[in-house]
Image (tube, rainbow, N blue to C red):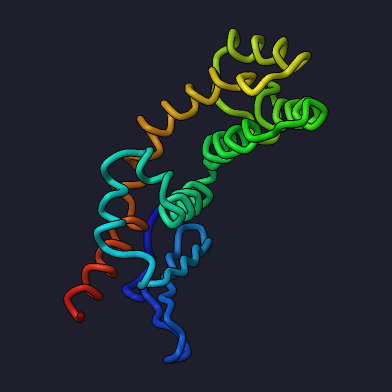
Length: 178
């Protein structure tokens, strides 16, 4: 991904708007628009995202920025699966759990599925068996694998990205202005 031109940061159109809008343009012509509220997002918070993937995902703005970054690279299936599993674990109804487990399987696990994640055959088959009588642990192994992939691949790429560096520079510039 390559940023176009020096106009990465666009100030709010209205002086009363407390937000900052950052537009990042990527090849081929895709644009990511990030809107932040300086009173809620500090340079210190943003710097803490680099401490660990867990710290990044715990932050509402960190998660949103990471997701946008992955979407720009057409590699958001892992974070989408991980988040879907987090939501799945909160389901209390066995009927809803069964229905949701099948949807997750169809969307992420099944070979050739729309957002197929990169897991080994053994794990894929284990999930196929698990969803017949699903529990909250149904996707745990796959979720661990996907988290590890993000930690080793997507997360370091994000930290080196123009998206993250531009955001840090913008917040640092705001800090010096007071």
